[in-house]
Every structure is written in structure tokens, then in C-alpha cells.
Image 1 (cartoon, rainbow, N blue to C red):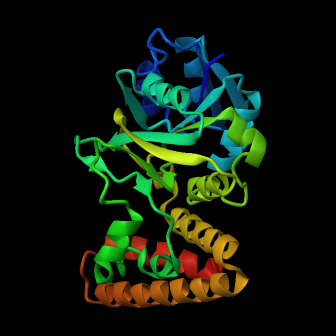
Image 2: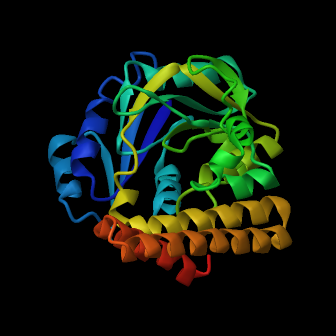
Length: 304
């Protein structure tokens, strides 16, 4: 087997159908491909629909929500391919993107991980390539502080690289990333301490530390509709994102910095919680304010 495509799904049956349909000729006549769906106890009939409509797909139906990182690790353990493509269920592959990514790995044995140019639903470009963040980025890479450090954020997002270019980067987005099996055998799979978010940054950090290159491939394209699974648990999403952020920076910069970052993030959320509370009292879009108060309060109660 050349390529194993691994998709972790949770309650997004319609998106998953579109994703699987886009993979019908994923190998483009050049590669043997298998597709593995790891379903995290979906309640929308996903397992039944996959069995009925896509009998060629290897379905791993779990009896609990394993989360993104553990689900992918389960899928990778069952995969037979030389190359492993981790793909979100809310994506659609355009043309021969999968084979194009494999072509890149075939041409250069020093490349361990690659990811494609990614488009939003409306056809605009989605930022999916990264340079490793420094300590300042850890603080300013939040929705409310980004505007105070635009150059820092542009560097983190590798904005100097053209969307259609192929270039070395530090990390590519986990919505679609192809990894050489030799990499996983050397450094292991995802760190399951990250339930979701920052797991691909950590994985690429470990791969580069082991001597592998990470390359963004602008010649391959996918559409990423984005956030369909995580959007089902908006408050929890804030908690998971910031916990993962603290975990990543603790691993890279040490426990002391991780504690400091956690404190800064809680202060930022406390400030935003207060602002939303004032707006709620003033009667401005109370339903939205109430939802945000609940989400931000969940972060503060979690302690990150």
C-alpha cells in the first residue's frame, strides 16, 4: 500500500460523505490508496452510512469520543501505507492533490511531512503554514491581542510565502497533512496530551528536531470548510485550545513559562468576560453575550 488516508469523524456525516466522494481517484492512477475512517461514537448515523455508501472504506467505529489526536493515532496504527495522510472530515480534495503530495515525498527523501494549499468554502485562501512561534507569539496569538503585533503574527503565519509556492516551513495544518511512515516510526504519533489544537505544531517540532524537513506544497489544493466538529462544543473548544497552547509552550520553553502563559491567558479571558458582562447589562445582543459569557467562564473555571 502506498497511501493510507485517515479521517477521524464525529457527528459530521454529510461532510464526511462529501470528503469521501472527493477521494474516489485519490491515487490518480499512480498510487495504491486505502481509506480509513475512525468514527468517535457519532450519533448521526455515520457508521451505518459509511458501511452502506462506501464499502471499500475501512471503518473503525469506536464506542467513545476518542478526540482528534487519539483517533488519528488509532487510525495510523491500522494503516498499511508508506505515506499517511491525515485528513479532516470537513475537507474536500481537489483533483490529484493527494497524489501530488505523495509525489513530493517520492522526489525528496529528506521531506518528512507536507501539507497542501487550503481554500475556505468561499474559495479564499486559508492560512495553513507556520513558522514556530516564540514566547511573544504565545501571548499575542489570541483573538483580542493579535492587532497589537501584526508583524509578529504575519511571521508566525509564514505570510512571506506565496499561497501557490512550495517551500520549507516549520509546520503545516493538521486538517490535511501527509507524513512519511519512517517519521512516525522514529518519533511516534501525536502526543495524546493534546486532545485537539497544537498537536500538529508539536508533531512537526519533534519531526524537525529529528532531522526531517516540513514542506508546504502549493501545487496541491483542498477545500477546508472548517470547525464542523469542534463547533458543536464552542465553550469546550476555548478550553481545549488554550490548554493545548499552554502544553505546547511548556514543552518547548519550560514549566515556568507555561505557568506564566496560563496566567496571562486567564487574565485576558477575565477581561473579555467582564466586557461581555457590561455589554449584556446594557442590553446589546444579549443572546450572543450570554453565549460568550458561558464560554469564557468555562475557560476561567477550567484553570487551563
